[in-house]
Image (cartoon, rainbow, N blue to C red; front, side, top):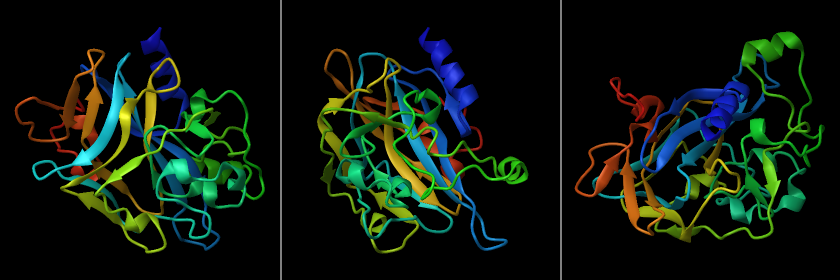
Length: 269
């Protein structure tokens, strides 16, 4: 049943190079194209909002996304991260849900472990069945058929928003992670060899599929990332999953490398 639901999700959502592979704690890592907003300037690329999801095995919880001296963490775009400099936040639990219709807050770039605002957890839009709190306008309604086909544009955000109301949003703790380029300063690279964002005690997904969002990135460029995760097993043991060069007691999961960081021979496992 679980495999069938994930296969349906991947068929119905607009994904970029999805990584579907089996592992002890990670079932998959995939990038959802959450929204595409064409530029008002002819010839300029659209603003695309990507969401990075981790599909955990049942009864596992994500504790942190991290980088260390042997396993660098990098999130990169070829242009710059798009940030809402008025209402935006660096971490999703700080996003004011009551301001989400103050465009472009719903397209802000931020980091998370599960949450999409101070009142919502994130789910892929293909799994969102409760409509939307987002309005068109200010977010654009469906464009013409030719533009939709050319840019592979998802349905308007006013039809589904990828937001699930949730009574208790956990705070993300920033452990020495420099997130400055998710604020008012423009930049194209987030990286650390000695930092993390985490939820104390770990966090499981809010659906039966155990999906957790770990970042929303909006950019006009090409997205790449190199990530490492610490996951708690059902036996309450922390296990580190790394994108490259696993050491003792670490597990290699090549799907944590994406875009320019993915090795040519990578199988995605």
